Image (cartoon, rainbow, N blue to C red):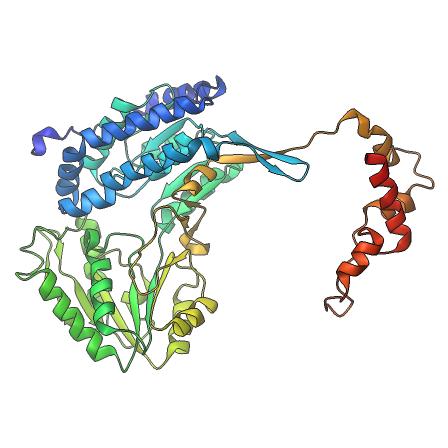
Length: 501
């Protein structure tokens, strides 16, 4: 299969956007997507469409990024196929109403818009939106035109066009979409555009899910295994040439381990790429000239020393995996998200200094990657915040666990059951039968003489004193007072219990 098999990317005429949005919103109001089996049929058809287009997915990602087939399949098509199988096996269980004591929680649907702004083919959030009974508008990134074109081909060949549509384009088309009113917006991309999305959603109070990435630290303590550190973190920067929001942005390494860690990076690089990364079919390229120049400028502005790699070729959009030792937390390689194959190392005196530096650079990254003993890891986790954590590894996130950011790295989470939950509204429902009227009559005016009786039957007595200490013998008091906290209150509750029999 060659480039001729990949369809050309054609931007959606702006005058058609409102019409398409209105169509899917109208379909939602007709309750077409409410039926669970309808949703499952859509997901199953999407599964086979992805399966049938696996070769085109691989070729599109090769043309857009020179992405290796292995990475394209494990990180794109196979991942999506497994997600669909997982959802289809559990959806009937997920859609069941939940019961709480005397309360039912019903899952209601929304009609969201999905906005994707990375150059991969991940349709993960879309799967959750379909499973949750929504109609969906998808906006892929124009930065990866072949991938966007193949995504459109897959979506249009598999999904009901009255419920799901895809809009192609750049800034004008995106602005036209944001001018519409949505029930939910899901965006994956950078913080700058994320703020634009959130601002556009604010006038209508539209809830937004933002998956923004972050300046993710790897903290290497003196108890870490240098070989493990180097192999796993080098791999974390090789996937898609580091153009993954979960990859580590910098390493804080106990100074005693720095020489060994650097040496192991060199060994791992030579093992992974015996003839160099540029000659390897297993190494991707930078997405475009703008991204290439941005990454290059970060290296040029750094005061650090290159210890490994550093070769660049703008014509080929090639940047070699590059290890740089820096001497300040203010270095350009640490304070900016590289989104590329850069591995800056800052030596630190101890774990406490590493944590302080990480918190000062960005206190809420998408991920934190601690390497070392269990005690060291627990200390790091107790002193930091992040969207997720991979211990002794680089972004080894389990596909069925919630994935998302916190603070500056975004908010909201998806993957597995969370992909369903993020696109439903859990509506509490209570029902008061007529026979309760005699008991509920105490709430009606006139109120004279009713307050003490009402409080006797409803007030919860604290199990703590004025100093904030837990009160002992709480259960014994509960038994004697029926939870009322006093004999009088207990008697009041006894009356209610008797009346309810």
